[in-house]
Amino acid sequence: MSAPAQLGPLLFGHRGASAECPENTLEAFARALVVGADGVELDIHATADDYLIVDHDGVIDGVPMMRMTRDEISEAKPYVPDLSAVLSTIGSMICNIEIKNWPFPESPIHDPTQRAASLLADLMHTHDTSTIIVSSFDVGAIGVFRELSPHVETGWLTSGVAFPEALSMAVALGHPWMHCHDHQLGSDPG
Image 1 (cartoon, rainbow, N blue to C red):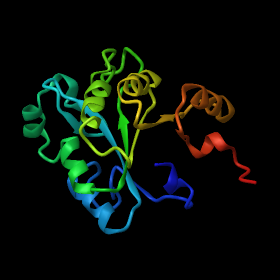
Image 2: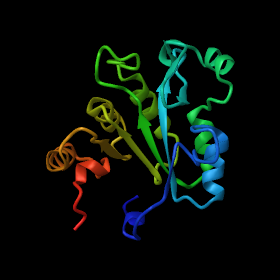
Image 3: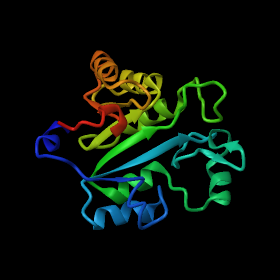
Image 4: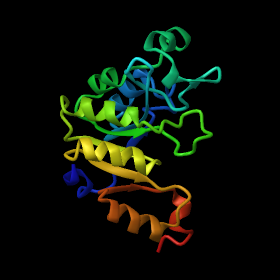
């Protein structure tokens, strides 16, 4: 995965081609491929029956998707895809898979068991991982994932942490990728 970064900036479709299609849908990911994106970013959650689904918020009508079955989610939101379907759709595109797990117990998408990280690690043992990056704001989630799938590259999402501290921490944790917000870099690009 390191080789593409040497070629220069990469264009990622955030949640697919979300400016043209509903975000985190098969349509958005297929469109990103058509318009020439180098890769896509997406968000995953585990369901109560151990599927990995692609959705940003992870909550339907106040109920966390991790407490719903795949069928219940499909009934409420038929456009929410499984991760496997998305990976089939994008083929060999680079894919940044964000494990959505807020590390705050009061959050409706807080999962101290790290089930999504474990399920993703299982999936990665049967999938070509040469174009996969796994990231999360939750260092615990990517820590569990790395322990189970050390062959897959990881990145830490560092919003809210000062850039020098975030960089030091990402290096110390062994993540080859660090995803930061532009405000962390300061206003002087020089």
